[in-house]
Image (cartoon, rainbow, N blue to C red; front, side, top):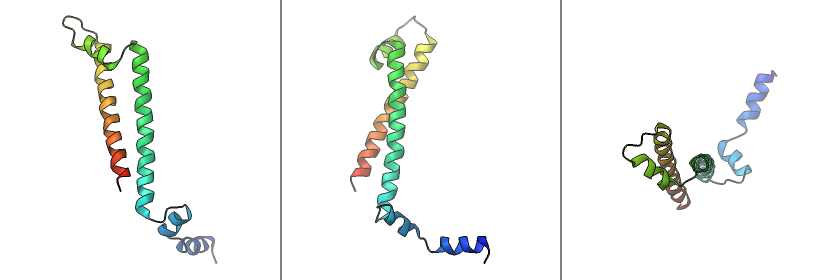
Length: 106
């Protein structure tokens, strides 16, 4: 028997459901939810870290930077760019929190 044939026979004894059950997931949907949750938590941590860096960089909250962003006659392209990025991170974290809530409902 060739190595390829042996590998094929061994692989054919495994099923997705069996593998997931051996990992503690009796239902594939539970495994998918857990995986999605881990991905979302990773993104949330990355975005929150970026938000903390922006707060440290500017020495103020998002609202403080918003004031600079909206100030008339004071063009600060770095502040403008960081404000828009910070808002995006804030919106993304809120969306992730809603998604995490949705995953735990079922």
